Image 1 (cartoon, rainbow, N blue to C red):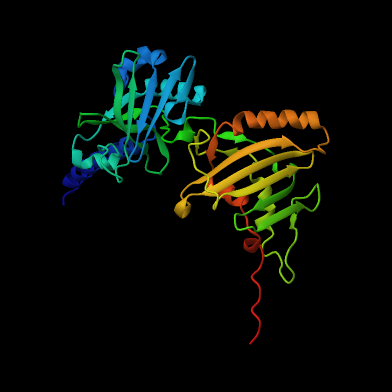
Image 2 (cartoon, rainbow, N blue to C red; image 1 turned 180 degrees about the vertical axis):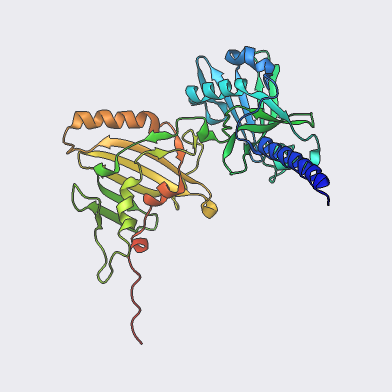
Length: 353
């Protein structure tokens, strides 16, 4: 190769390399590149304050949020209060979405972006429907996955596809998609600090019970009472965390009392008492295959409460929320409040033959 032809080849190679570099940089850049300032949902922008209902459907369920006066509620949950702030932020972010770039219009590729039609359990898209007060559709769109850059971090934007249109898009703008009941509400419904708990008693339907008592008011360790002779605690943590049952407990779902049947033969009764005389009583059960964990609560002041009026006021505040609903709670909270004596003790040694 002559020097001249070599230089020509090098120049072409450099151009190709630079072009490829720009292509890669453009493809994986974490900067949001907006092709237009066009809103993704132009009708929503001018009517965002006049929306009466939002509907989110996934491959298992549909969640509806409705306006009721100045507030938002969940109609399928007997008008349980939604978080007005959560709904407001959701609608504002939705209205702020801008068109970033055109993506695939091939239905065979929609699943990669999670914007495929919802037909079965394997479809991961979420259908979002928003109507105005006259019932006109403002949004009827399949919301897909977030965009990720080459480093695996979340880029600002989501893939979307309007219903009935094969064309998918990448949006510009930060947008979270609440898809569960507890994402639309204030999930924490009770908070009795674990450090206040003096005793926890768990009574099982089979007649067995477990009571634990804090060893030191300033410490975190508990002791199990009435331990059978020859047995000892296996893991200290198994009883220490029993005081965390109603500490910042959050709901996963809820029903009005009477909607959920608490089976007599499966319902566990737990009592937590604080040093200053607050008593929280819980009834809990797990559905078949431990798929759901349900609980109902009530609180009262013990007869020997140190400041009975103050504790009665606290109990009334708890009951205002706790007794109005039955709650599905996280599995770990359920386990903290349903320990059995045999579960926390070492296994008895078998007699030698």
